[in-house]
Length: 200
Ligand code: TMP
Image 1 (cartoon, rainbow, N blue to C red):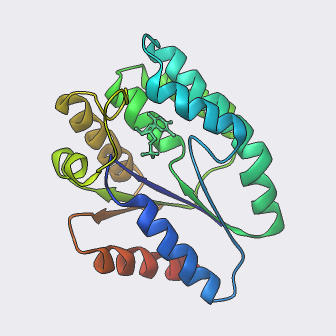
Image 2 (cartoon, protein in one colour):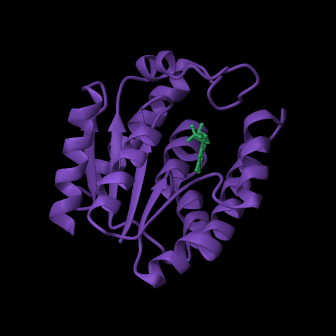
């Protein structure tokens, strides 16, 4: 089972992912918790580049995320799914639709093609969207935004990212759950947990 966690900056994805991992392990399940970009050494390099390298074009940015994804799917996600593990992935293809599609305004058709090429058929059975107003998220996220190209984007960019996520969720309610991430942490966890248990 492949589960993706999505949301804007400071939505609480990592905290939720760690809590879900703990609960699933307590049930005796094998879990792989991973993230994009990251999850492989190439992913870590891409992560540094997309955050800090000035002058990247939107298409270069798109293809860097996709290169990291192709490696991540082959080296981490696919082997885990083949072993029968549960994969919890902090960001996947929906991030690219939201950030490079809605945020950077690249054509959604191109994003879909690039996502297909990189994911090679790997698709989450469930995507948990932690939804909250961008200014709340950016205030919560205490990491230094200096020089972080994506976090440092203007408010309108982050509003478009949010809209991009909500549009994807609305188009596929069977496979998406939107969670109000302004709720207390426990309430967010219980909402996610109930849906995962129903699926399992
Ligand atoms: P995070 O570590 O906070 O999840 O940050 C990863 C950043 O990369 C975040 O700003 C979202 C961005 N991102 C994209 O723009 N496109 C993508 O496809 C992915 C996976 C992440």
